[in-house]
Length: 55
Image 1: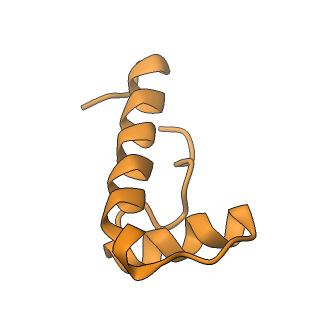
Image 2: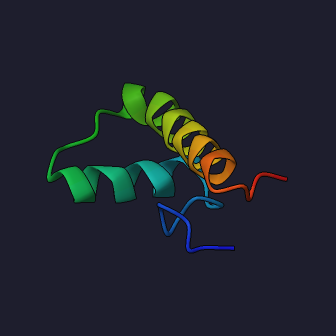
């Protein structure tokens, strides 16, 4: 398996959202944390499917 798009993909929503925010260089409002984490995981899933690595 290739390296995941996000280092914290398996972490809590808060940790994953912090990683995304740091990459974007932006603040992450608390109300956005769950959605950002869900979208990062969805993006990872799509990436895995495209690479033929989906489980």
